Length: 196
Image (cartoon, rainbow, N blue to C red):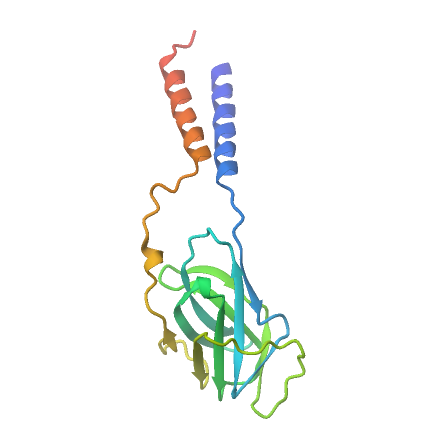
């Protein structure tokens, strides 16, 4: 009975040690649009994001959704994550204060992040948000027009990203390798030593 308790304690310790060694500081944040930002119809609006460097996310898809009504717009597919910015030109898009962005891998259904809620104004309205960033130069602009329709294809599809298809077999931290090797050696020795 005593060996069984030690075995369970050892297994819990090795599991905790393994997960502690694999922890990393991953983040993916949509900086713009910020909470209560105002986008204008007939104007170019800016999306900005920041993310971890070693999170193995090389590209993602951008979708725009509404909270109060059924509405999903497929904005851009395969956006390069290292770009950090994307311009969106809105043309005759429905006004509302319940929009948010979704950064997702739509192939696998993995959601990376969502933006804060923001407003889209009519073309005749003037934004009162004074912290509104100007569009980025040298960055692609995606044009969205009409009402949200999830059956339409993405408004823009970027080229495939070559770095997203790498094979990272040898990218294992040495601490994980040592812990797993130690666990295998101790487990084998424990199995081979007879209990008295």
